[in-house]
Length: 98
Image (cartoon, rainbow, N blue to C red; front, side, top):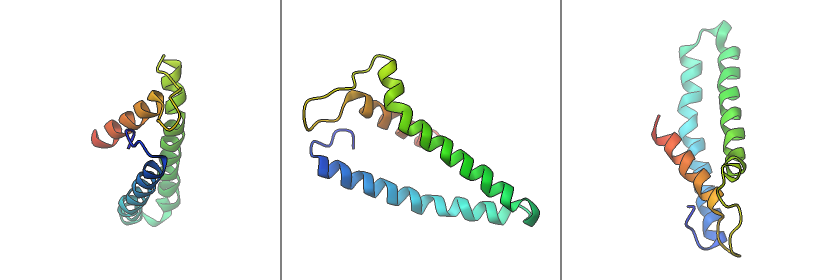
């Protein structure tokens, strides 16, 4: 996806990624409900939601962090900046390292 040369193609890939992550997360949500006792269920969902939120914030800050590390944040018109490409690679590494 970071090498998509058309913005529309990159947007479609992002939409597919979002849909597939939502489909993949449902079993994890059900797993919390199945494995945690009824009195701890609310806390289990809260912790899970917290981790999801932290991951979303880190993912959205990644291009800024990579820019602070010296990776270029500008690109010619119609291209994706190297800092955003690095953020996608870091996210892919995080997903595949689990």
